[in-house]
Structure formats: structure tokens, C-alpha cells
Length: 190
Ligand code: SF4
Ligand code: SF4
Image (cartoon, rainbow, N blue to C red):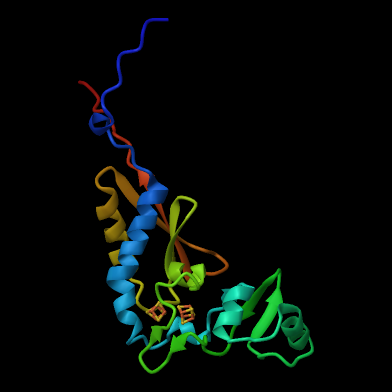
């Protein structure tokens, strides 16, 4: 086997695009620039939990509802119909729907645990997040603008990629934006 040529220094090698990483960064940047500023004037805040379901683990539930009792005691109370009616237990988690999240400050439309570890991941992801190398946008957020979001991703990825949009057939408000590399067509010689 012939000897391999020496590899150029890392800084001189062509950068390969990591779509998942790039998309996650683009989603976070889009949320910070276009979504978060709208939250305080939103007409249908997601934190009111009228259309969305909040998923919490025990630590989050205990903190948000300021529960003093043990988990078994709370579960027993919930199962007996004596717990908060907006909470359902299942799969080791708790699901909240129909009443505003206790961490939601309705007077100013902000989250009291914003930027804290206790904030549920699903809240941070909503309404635009990376999933398996694609970007998912949830149109239940009135601030999502698919055209602007596509332009945002195109700018983040640079030339050579196109964005393909498709809605979930069962949940049409969930739109997936996939990134496809554009093929280079060869010119035919005469
Ligand atoms: S629905 Fe969208 S704009 Fe409204 S509060 Fe939630 S994230 Fe903010
Ligand atoms: S934790 Fe914060 S972002 Fe999540 S639903 Fe509650 S108030 Fe909204």
C-alpha cells in the first residue's frame, strides 16, 4: 500500500456541514430573535396550556406546585381525584392541560423559570426544534412564520442546500423542514 499523503492541518481542511447541529443552532437563533420577543404580546400563549400539554417529571411538578408531600402520597391523592384536576399521571411523568402553568406570570406574559435548569425541555424546544436532522415547526405558535424560518435556515446553511417543507398528515400544524443537498448537474458537451 503506498504511503498516505500527510493530512493538512485541521484549520485548512474543508468544513463538513453537520445538518443536525446547524439546524439546532438555527432553531435556537430563530427562537431568540423572532419568537421570544413576541411572547409578551401573544394572543394565545402556549403557557396557558389550553391547546398544548405540558410534560413534567416529579422534580419539576414538585417545584412548580410547591408540593410538600412525598411522591407516593401525591400520586395517591391524584389517583383518588383529590389532586389538581389539570394534572394526569402516566409513564412515570405528569401531564398538565387546561389550566395555566404555575410558572407562567400572566401579568407580563413571561416564564418565571426562564433560563433555569428546572424549565422543561419541551418548553425550550417549542415551537421550533431540531429532530433527527430535520427541523420541526409547530404552527400552534402564532409567531412562527414558515417563510422567514426557511430563509433563516437557508442563510445558516449557505449555498448548496434547499429546504423541503411537509406537514404531518395527522397533525397538520406540525411542519417538517428538511434540508436537501442540491446536486450539481454536468453540462453535456456538444
Ligand atoms: S405561543 Fe409562541 S409566541 Fe405565544 S407565548 Fe408561546 S412561544 Fe411565545
Ligand atoms: S415552564 Fe415556563 S415556558 Fe414552560 S409552560 Fe411553564 S411558564 Fe411556560
